[in-house]
Image 1 (cartoon, helix red, strand yellow):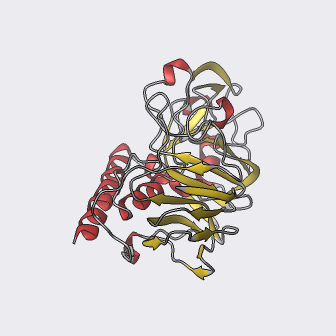
Image 2 (image 1 turned 90 degrees about the vertical axis):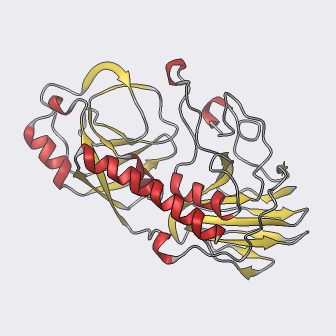
Length: 313
């Protein structure tokens, strides 16, 4: 078991998301940075769908009541095991009565902690992900608090302590994020100059950013006939533009419908890049073709396979 001594700023259980319930108004949720979440699970020998702890901006302090193989991926939060520095993007053993602590993110915004076997939380609507706004899933439907105790499931026999991810699979987090987008579905609701502005300007992440969406600030994207549409579907990656012309990128906990015109959609492999962005970071959008978006997804899947093969070698 793992006991929470300090929870950090916002630490929740997240998995691959709650699929199949958008028509009922239930968001997807799940890990904001899908790549870091999946790799953390791979490093400890878990299936991709196991839950990890998603720590945001500032990590927690955890007491391990039993020895466990652990991996931490994503933002560098200066992890320390019993006072000694531990590396990100590797698997290491925490001994019984070990204390693992984290501080503020040095690079990036979100970090993922996986334990061998996975956390033992009851699925809600098929997922262990936490949707805090509805007190749904995860650990009592909320962020972790001091004193919480998390169980884990029995791990597989395979051990991978000491395995470090090769550098070519470790992303670098910068203060400027470039996001590939597919235009639409309502790009015809914008003036041609508005579309050009969207694809050429640099935007800044405002302090209105969370698991629901990122509000950006920069040159206004001009509509052709107002921002409002009849509400239709929203998914993570949708880029809404309200009347003030400032883009809003929807994230994992976004609502299922919205009434602002959507100029574009961020392709799924690039959504993890924005999930590691924080207030003050710069964002640029570049247009890509559908074939490029499909190839980016295939490349992401290839990376998972190669990492799995490396870890089994």
